[in-house]
Image (cartoon, rainbow, N blue to C red; front, top):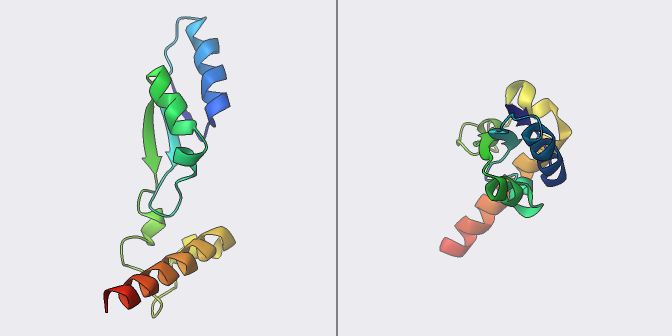
Length: 105
């Protein structure tokens, strides 16, 4: 069985519950990208690894933000950018790019 968006404690609880019924927990799909690495930092990926649960990265290119498709001159991003959290991530990415270009010049 696979789950979506489970935290470390959720994965541990689901794994124990399913194992007691003979059902393996095989995957956890989490938002994981260059811009959003919460699953790495909050212990979710570590818990999955410990239990043998595969982690599937949802939106590895952050909905296109890390693909180069959306830039400061083309920030539309379609419906993805209507989410304030994603807009904030886009601005953070643009700031990182600007800092990198300043350092490398």
